[in-house]
Length: 334
Ligand SMILES: Nc1ncnc2c1ncn2[C@@H]1O[C@H](COP(=O)(O)OP(=O)(O)OP(=O)(O)O)[C@@H](O)[C@H]1O
Image 1 (cartoon, helix red, strand yellow):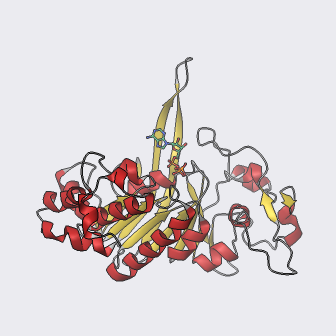
Image 2: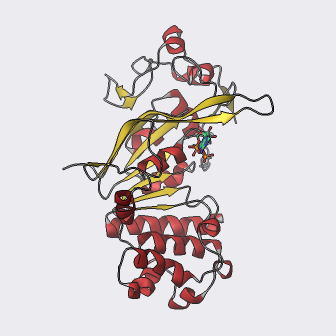
Image 3: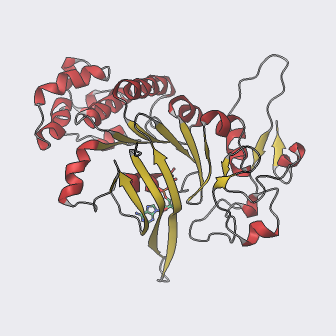
């Protein structure tokens, strides 16, 4: 069966103007990214701020076209942004962003906003109340304005609107990071339920690795526009193979069990990545404890490693790296 969404080697660059001195610099936000999302499955996309996650989300939705490479949705090439064909296919692809207040129109009651996509696509507008109820809102929320709802309720309203057209594909870009911690779990549970009940394919973008673990069937780790590791959440988030994934995962605070030592936290050394000034070879090499000559010279391909088939973009993926070396020159704290 064809995948719901398939990106093949997509890249996207932007030109940024350089201050008062003029000129411009090219920022390669996404660099030869390939990913597959199956129906009813969630791909979690993680990585530091600015590594290209949101750009990947926009390319996956066809909001922007890649400079090179191809996005296929349901077996067919993604239509050009804003073409009539793209607008028609929009009903089947929706997105949920970080800031629900920004995503909603402050001048319109919630019910009217959920009805809007139904009207645009000629669907039955009496579905507004069942939609609100399906995300845990009440009938009377339909008449309220966004500022009359809590943050969690607003994100539920955004979800009701996104689900109105019964989409097959949902991009959730940091959907819980603007919410109170107490509300985050509720929205995560709702997303898990939505996925199980509706069988949507989802791209879940987040820097919260625990949230990613909860919803994802596959996880991809991004560094400076490239995917450096991809696999099942248990493998990537518990036994990460790429040195960058190791550092990312080690930063998750671990509950302390009686008598247990804190897991060592790997603090990345060196400058944070700058997409306008990409290092040669493996972009992670200036911060990597294991970098050798080849890492400085040659970009590693994302490929299954020989030992266990884990998909990693690392020249040293098959080397037996000593455990203690993970903290050198990376620093061990706690
Ligand atoms: N429209 C744009 N114009 C210029 N540069 C852009 C544009 N969109 C993204 N970029 C740049 O591309 C790089 C990747 O940005 P992107 O927003 O995709 O990263 P991200 O991983 O989603 O970050 P965050 O977690 O902070 O949202 C950044 O350097 C960003 O400044």
